[in-house]
Length: 122
Image 1: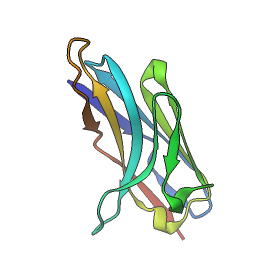
Image 2: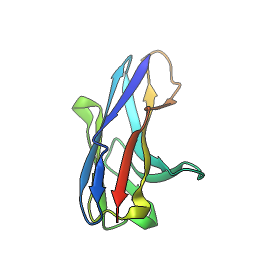
Image 3: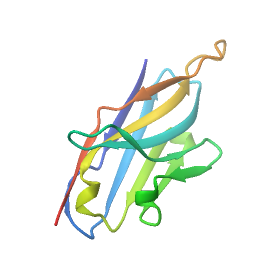
């Protein structure tokens, strides 16, 4: 019904930058919050940043001042600009979006992408 496709993950040296993108497609009436989460081996999936349809943002303390989340509502796409990358940012990054699929149905469902690998070398 709804697909999220991430792109932009790569191998980068410490101090470098990457920009992740995630596009939502399929049966979409409205998209509320979109966000990025990451999961390192052996760890739980954790919030990195999220943004509401109105543009309100919040970030994990570990990325404040280094990462910026933004979105294009017309394209149902969310971005994550990652600067000053550190080895501890290495993880699989997942996109999530809370979507309403039908004008006749008030149910909101959170969908997840497949993930994109970010590796930061020291």
